[in-house]
Image 1 (tube, rainbow over the protein chains, first blue to last red):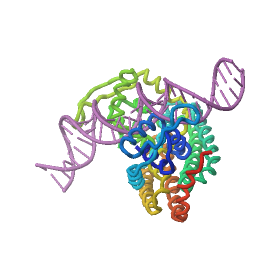
Image 2: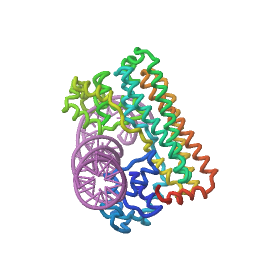
Image 3: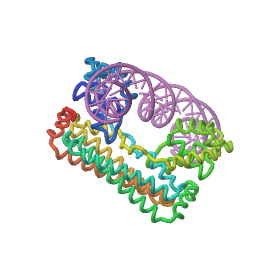
Image 4: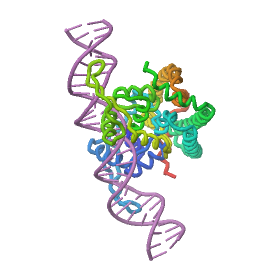
Length: 191
Length: 191
DNA sequence: TGACAGTATATAATTTTGATATATATACAA
DNA sequence: TTGTATATATATCAAAATTATATACTGTCA
């Protein structure tokens, strides 16, 4: 649902074609959003039908491939964008991640196995942290809003790695008994 | 995809029916996962067909409504669960949130409008923080893994509210010129 | 008595994701 | 030169997830 508005937002800057929009989203919203073609092209099509955008130009690709379809935002599109921009969110975000789901069930595995997976996770997020701090300067030049979101990404990364390391430590320090307890205590009747 | 494994994990503790599984997921994974009936019941059906779970019993509801379908995990189900539990994640999580998407485009709105929405966000997350810290004790009793994820939820909450407040301050302190700059600088050619 | 919340399963419609198809050009190495 | 990888560019399909709604019965509270 937000995809449409991200597209409308980007078309405020200048006319773009699909592939270009995807590139922009990856570069500017990479911290908190991804987009895929299966979502992008059908949306461009339906948005055109709804009158939010128009096909401004079709020109051959600079470097092989199909023609570039350049889209422009319409007055209706601007209107829809503004009302979205001023709307309020109803539910807080959740840290939806397959790893955290798995983590909950680590009591069914060995401590060694759990630590192995956590180590992999730490490595992954430390690499991401390095990448993100390296890109911070570039994002800073994009104005305060892009900068602030980039900084949030870095802060989250820091906090998460810290948590992963603490979890690792506590799992190794805590006895296997404690791990077994997870299994038992979830069996307690619901309150 | 992880839904299946969450179900398999819960069925390790004891046999459950769909409605009960949803309740457990909300109570134990509420920080990082939600489930809905449109996902749950079709999954239970397909998992039964795949031989991961079996229908252990059908009994009338305690309090009106349709019969309870009690499901049990099979040997195949346990096997599938273990190999999932030991698998490694390939990509780090993203803070996918419609508010953050909107935040990026706040340069197109007034500072007052931006602050208004941020204030709403702060209120929402402060309330969530209160709820989460109140539930911490209950989660602690569920063993180290459930406890650690609950603590992560609280830590994230703290960090996020702190970031929101800083963002609010910087938007109010920074001139409107700076806000306009977002608009301009996003127009810079891609590197 | 009427509204609302809780127990319980189920599905339809829509949206999102992940993967793949198609087409061309460039760069680089074997 | 031949193959491979990467980049540009649009498009669609299958699978999965989300949202909303239907059905049906009970208990509680005003």
